[in-house]
Amino acid sequence: QVQLQESGPGLVKPSETLSLTCTVSGASISSYFWNWIRQPPGKGLEWIGYFFDTGSTNYNPSLKSRVTMSADTSKNQFSLKLSSVTAADTAVYYCARDKRGSGFGDGMDVWGQGTTVTVSS
Amino acid sequence: SYELTQPPSVSVSPGQTASITCSGDKLGNKYVCWYQKKPGQSPVLVIYQDTQRPSGIPERFSGSNSGNTATLAISGTQAMDEADYFCQAWDSSTAVFGGGTKLTVL
Image 1 (cartoon, chains in turn blue, brown):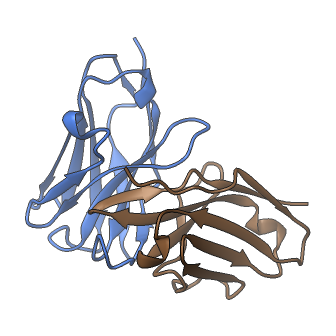
Image 2 (tube, rainbow over the protein chains, first blue to last red):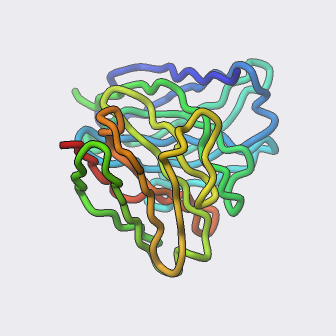
């Protein structure tokens, strides 16, 4: 059974960098597409980007200038860094798996429980 | 950038069929997925590849996609189906979510 678990600080100061990690169990991160998605309070889901096993990444154009994703295969973890955060980045952040990524329509079939990040001084 | 449009809310009586639409330019040429999101819980994939149900999703959930509109239908709607529903598609290797529809079971 594949499980994902997000971790990281729940409070980040404005202008600083938000850093989150997603630990994967039951599957290797050297396969599949690993996504970050967020949901601001009272709003809808927003895709942040994905990391693919070869080190390939793709980001939401609206966030691209501030986002970096990477992975640590030895720990079976992948991470998100979002720089220069503002209050608008306050959200529940989820990591999720997509088996084959764009074009195949498999869907994000496994999600972490989500972690709340608040941007405030 | 590509956009998916959903109605903000849909209401249905228990036992009736709820239909939630998702519209986008030439959406029928893309695969659409649907997610159920309840407060305080993670999203759950209920439909993938327009019409397919993941293991464990009840048969009352079905999907279709043609032209510019995809539709999620829930037949015999139950109180437990009350949730937010989001459609999602890929455009140029970018995932796009619809704004979400709040389904109320009256």
